[in-house]
Amino acid sequence: MSLLVLAALLVLSWTALAQGPTGQEILDELSFRTILSGSGSAELTMITENAKGAQRSYELQVYVRMDEEGDAQFLEYLAPGDVRGTKFLSLKPKDGESQMWLYLPALGRERRIASHMTGDSFMGTDFTYEEIGGSFDYEEDYAVQRLQDQVEQGVDCYLLELTAQGSAAAYDRVLIWVWKDKMVPVKIEFYGSGNVLTKTLTLSDFQLVSGELIPHRVVMANNMEGTRTILELTKVSQEEVSPDIFTVRNLRR
Image (cartoon, rainbow, N blue to C red; front, side):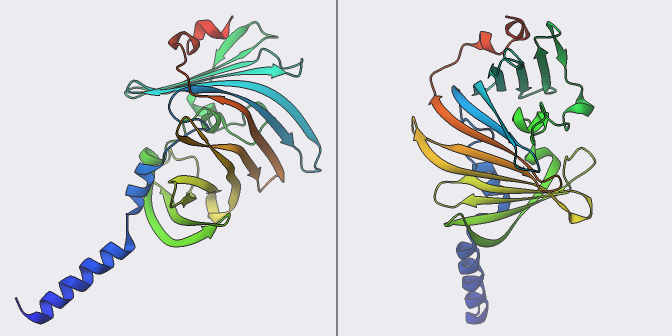
């Protein structure tokens, strides 16, 4: 092997090492897909803010389970009185179709959220059903590449660009800023057709809970409408949650 070829190989090897992980490797290492990681529960305050800045506050209880069988989430409104008892169940098995149900006390029964409705607004918030239920699937619907690293919220971040593959993707393009040291997303931008920024998700106030870094403040801003939905975790537990929680029967209790 000539010295010239050897030198070229060394340069290529050093460049690959300097660049670090690929976009797909970074995406695969993200430590959570929903507010909680693994299995646990949380009490949270949700604040909706309209374009004029007027706010309304809600209290919720959320249960999450992630295991080899798939992901499950159960959410219940605790206050105010006009929405108390409203419940939402999301099931995402490893093999099979995701399913969602919404229970409204006024109707006294649950209704299945059809697949064509999962991109609709959840209970008047800036989250869609699939976003609030943790069913937004980056891996199946998007191709990922790593862009130039950036600083976001004062921390060094990998910047990932996800481009929609096929008609199932909810957005044409998604940008994700991933905190290098912690491998958690701190900001996500969602773009619609024409590369128009439609929504921005920011995650902050990360705190360790049973060894997991959990964001205690999550803000989804609708850049088109000028509205925001703010989630603030007030109590988090990562104790095991009974499988009975994640059933349609539990919606009616």
